[in-house]
Every structure is written in C-alpha cells, then in structure tokens.
Image (tube, rainbow, N blue to C red; front, top):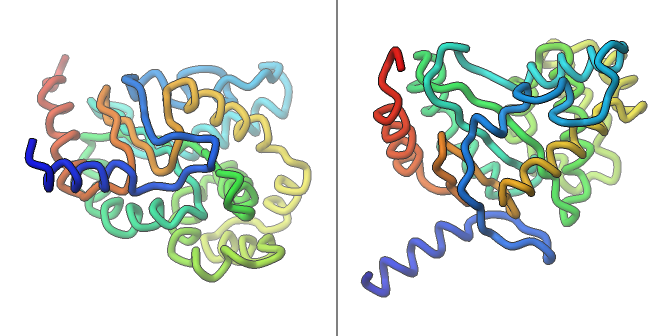
Length: 238
C-alpha cells in the first residue's frame, strides 16, 4: 500500500476520542448482537423483569432505536456526546444516512453510550438523553446535544442546559429531572459500557454496520459503502 494512502487511512481510523487507558480498535462483531433490546430491558443490566424500574428501562432502551423493524441491516452507533469527533460525524454523516437508509426502511439504528472520563459532561449528557428516551424524545435530544456541544461542554453544571434542550424537544422537564437525579439510567449506561467494551469498542465514535466495524469519524462514503455491502449480503426476504 502506498505510504501516503496508508497514512490517510490511519488518520481516519484514529479520528476519534479515547481515554489514556483505551485504544482505538474494534473486534469483529455483528451489530445485531449489540442491539439494546436484544437482551434484557436494560441492555443486560440486572433488573427484575416485573418491577416498574424494568419498565422504565425498557422504554429508554426502545427509545434509542430508530428505523423499521423490517430493516435488513442494523447499525450500532457507539458515541460520547462531548466527543468532538462524534459531533463531526453527526454533523456530516448522520443526516444523509438517516434520510437515505433509515427513513427508507433499509437500516435500523441503535445508539449506545460510551461517555469517556476525559469529558466531564459526557455522562450527564448521556443520562439526560436516556431519560428523554423514556419519553420517546431521544433522537431530537441527541441532535440538540451535538448541535450545541460547544455551548455546554465546559459548563460547571450542564444539567439546566440539558433540561432546556429536552423541553424544546417536547419532553416533560419535571419527569426528566426526576429521572436524572435518581440515576435511573445508571444500569443502562453501565451495561452499555460493558457490552460495547466486550465487542472491542475502545474509542468514540465506533460503529458496527452489520458485521463491519468502523472506527472514528470516517466520511459518509465509508458508511454508504458498508451499508450497501451489508444490504447486498442480506437480500430482501432473506
């Protein structure tokens, strides 16, 4: 491989956020095995299936999935709301992917959280987004979080800002605040980290399109190629 091309590919692969104790590699895995609702209501968290907590977690789990249940291919987004590379990917690639593949019924997408310790407001943002998911408002809130990242990233207390974003998205702020303050989404966030780490995700953003891992804020063309290949490998009706 020419040295210049190799350098470009390496730069693309490393275009992500990682803590000092994390690498930037992803093992082979299938997106379907990582889908949040494929396991228990809390993505593998140990919650009794009959209690109200489990019902809330189940709503949050389902709320961070978008796309037709009949879609042939899954894509898992593993992301950190405070990561600038995650914002870059969201701003450049997510809109076209949603329009071309999700809204046309070809792709089903789930968002999984990997807030990194180097980003102090990442975990609170994930809590707010998942609490919004309970109310069916995850996707507009995640858009708002990325769109305003530079405004809240360095706030000493970003909770009021997150509440404003959720309110603008149509969420009930009192319910969201109670959810956040009780750490109701703690089991999901913990389970997300465990599941994605077992799959080999060590930096953000990391993606699985079918069985293809993509690491870093790679260009839209890379995702189109991966999605098209996954669709070709799973013909309609198979």
